[in-house]
Structures are given as structure tokens and as C-alpha cells.
Image (cartoon, rainbow, N blue to C red; front, side):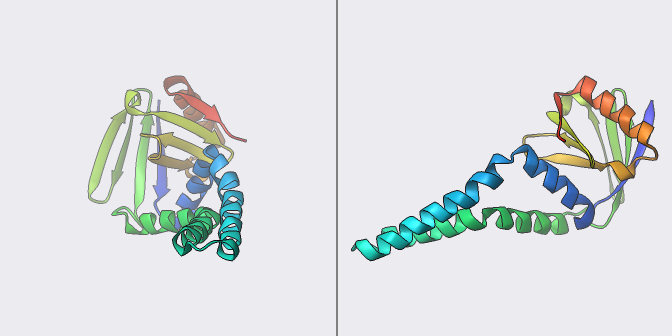
Length: 166
């Protein structure tokens, strides 16, 4: 079995990957803003009560950061995509039973399945993790058919630590 998949590496395609990657670590998106509001409120209260301006400023800056963290991470993600040497290029993948390989303008690489940390199937595609926060994204639309997508999903589930997000 050898299934070809072509993926254009740009912000619109990789945006779907980021959405599902952050859903895998969804607690951060839910904890960070309320924590930011709480710390910011503590800073405002400390401004009215204390003599130490440094602590107040730390609370205000920390609260603002935690409040804005999901948006900051999204901006960083888009920026890192644009800075990638593969930005705007099409990556042609070959997914096989023992390895996964890719070719793009100026580069080629092959990975055996034992080098893959884990994988996640989503309604929009597949995330294949090399490390905890380093992944390859295979959007469902990049496959030639629904059957090929399901075949790859089954293969990945059999050779990696795998889970599905709905």
C-alpha cells in the first residue's frame, strides 16, 4: 500500500492543524483567559491598596499576558509558518506500511513509523506528531478519496499511539 498525499504549506491549510493541535491541549485555552482576568483584577486591587508598585505592575502585566495568551500563540503560529522554508510550497507525501516520505522543492525526507511520537485523527484531517509539539498535518481534502483517508487513518492507528478528536 502506497498512498500519495499532496499538501500546500500555507497559513490557510496549517490553520486547521493549529486548531486541532490546540484542541488536543484544550485546557490551556480555557484556563488562561480566566486566570488572566483574575490576576489582572488582583493587580487593579493591589494598586488601590499597596505601596509596592512593582508587585502591582507584575500582576497587571501577567494578567494581561494570560488574558491574551490564546491570541498571542495564534499570531506566533502564523508567523512561524510564514518564516518556514517550505512556506508556499507543495509537499508530496507517500504514506506506506513501513514509512512515510516527503518530497518538496529542495528537500526530501523519510521517517519510519517508530520515529513517530503519536497521532490524532480529527474530522478535518490527521496530525502526526514527531515530538510533543512538532507535527505534520494531513488535511482530509488532500487525500484522493475518503477510502484512502480511512486506510491511512487505520494504518496510523495500528503503528502509533493514536486517538481521535470529535
